[in-house]
Image (cartoon, rainbow, N blue to C red; front, side, top):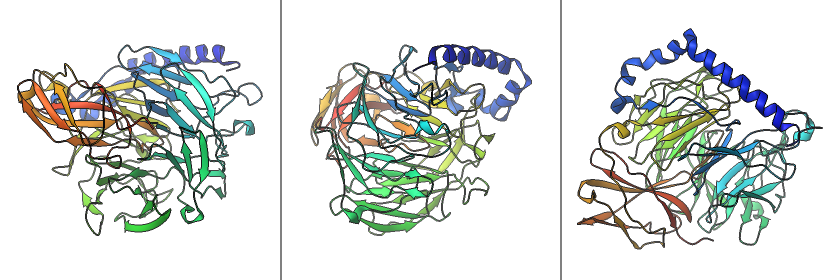
Length: 500
C-alpha cells in the first residue's frame, strides 16, 4: 500500500530493538517467574519458542491448506495516503513470512472471516478507514475472497448492510451466513445475510431472521443443523436456518459474559464458555460453564474455574480433546495481561496452568492450532511484541515419540470408511479431524473437533468419516491420530464433503 515500505521497515527495526531490550531487562525475569517451576517440565506445562517477527499485527488469522497462516490488521497511515490494510502470510513449516498485498483499496480490519469449502478465505465487512479514526466503529459492505494457492484477491458480492464487528458462520450447505455487527455507533446491523460462493451472490434472509445479536456474536453450527449463539449476552439462542427463526435455549449462570470466550467441545454438541466480565467496568471472571445441546432441555452447568481470571482470551481445541485458553487479561484493553495459559480437561472439568509466554495477548490477539499440533499465539496492537508471534508446544509433544501417518486419502465423502496407514496402529487411541481455524476478537466459528470411530488391523486404521455436513461442514480438516500417551501425529489435510 502507498507509503507502506518505509513505515514497515522502520516499525520492524524499532520492534526488534524493543524485544532485545525486553529480554535483557528485569521484566523478562518477571514474565517467567509465575510458572517457573511448572515450566521446568515441558511434559507437564509445555514450552514456548522465542518470539518471531511476522511483519504485521495478526489481529485476524486464518489457517490455509497450503500451510500458510493468513493474517491482517488495520490501515496504518493517514487516510489520504494509506488506503489498504497490511496483509501477510506466515508458513508454519518454513517460518517464511510474505506480504499478501490487496491490489485495491480495502480496510479488512474488524471484518469476519471463514475458510470456504474449497479452501479459499471469505472476508465480510470491516472498517471505513476514510474517517481517519481507527476506533470510530464505522462499517463497510465490502466482501472479499483470498485464494491461498495463487495468493490472489477478488472483491465479491457486497453486503446489503454495512458491518463492523460481524460474525461469519460456514454452513453445512457450503454457504456462509453473516450475523450482527453495526454500520456505525447506534446503528446495529440486524439482518442475516447469506453468501453463496459458487454463484458469488449475497441475499438477505426473510425478516423472521432479523434480530439484534450484537458485535462479534459467538456463533457455531451444531450437529442438529441449527446455529447457536452463546454470547456475549446472557441468553443463549438458536437460529434455525430451515425456518429462519430464532428461539431461546438457556441463560448462562454467570450472566452476560462481555469479552468472554467460547468454543465447541469435541463432537460439537457441547459448548464451553469461560471468562469475560459482567459489565464494562466489572472485574474479570475465571468461571466457566458447559451447555450440552444433545439433551431435550439444555441448561448451562458450572465446570472448573480458571486459576487466572481473564477476559479477551482465545480458546484453541487440541487434538487430544483438551482446550487451551491463551492470552487475555484482567482489564480491558491491555491492562494486567495474563501470560500463563491454562489447559482444560473436559473429562475432569479442571484447568492446569501452563508455561508462561513472553507477550501479553489481549485485545486484538489471536490463536490457532497448527497441523503439527503446536499453537500460534499472535496479535495485540500494543507493546513491543505487537508484530511478533509465539509458538506453544503443548505437553503432549514432550511425552515420547509421535505416531506417524504414512498414507491417507486427500478427501472423503460423508459416512464412508477412511483408511489411514501408520506403523503405530496398535498404539492409537484416537482419530480426530479438526477444521482449519479462522479467528479474530476471540471468535472462531470455524473451529470444531470431531472424534472418529475406528478399528485397527495390522498397519491400517479404518475410521468412519463424519456422518453428514451438520456434523462437519464441508471443507479442509486436519487429520490427527493420537496414541495412548495422548501424543498426536502431524496432520495431513483431509477434505470432507463436497467443494460446494
